Length: 116
Image (cartoon, rainbow, N blue to C red):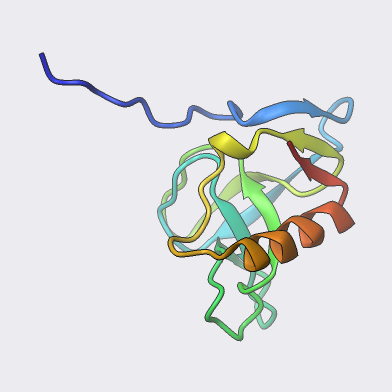
């Protein structure tokens, strides 16, 4: 029998968040992505896309975490502040070094998104 791996479900990465919807915002996502993807925000137009450490458009800075699976160029929910999340359920860029991850963790911590 083949082993199947489930993808992260909507909000599965959340350990805790603020009351009501204070932790979440509706944002424009520029690509089809999985729930739990760490996002950067494009400075020019405010859209979000997956964290890209080689970019220079704003997406090189960790800004949010996608709450659920997204379609390209659609408004989606993202966790942008006041939350505690599980690292093992997040999708980080491939080939990320420990130093780069530490920097991204610090950027999220500035928004009070704490990765455990």
